[in-house]
Amino acid sequence: LYVADLGNTRVQIFSLNQPSTGGTTAVFKVVEPNKIYVDDNDDNTEPTIYIAVFVGNRVEKWTKGATHGVQIGDECRSCSG
Image (cartoon, rainbow, N blue to C red):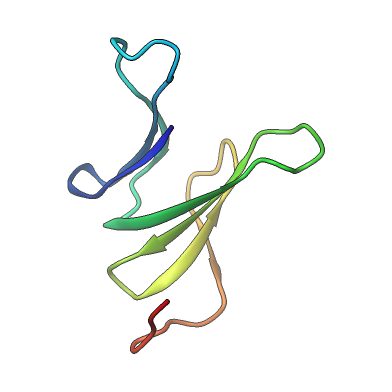
């Protein structure tokens, strides 16, 4: 289970098989992650995480080991959906 942790500027992973254990940080230092999409269909490699970032109204692409996200498309100031 992937969780966008808005207050702590990170995305965490929690195991559904071990609910009593803490989460693992998958992405850190992302300012106000709002929504996430996880694409795990990349040739059996680690998943790619797409994060809707509230500040800046943009989507960032994060891959395993990345220290910063790559902006996808332009900023969107009046978007919905």
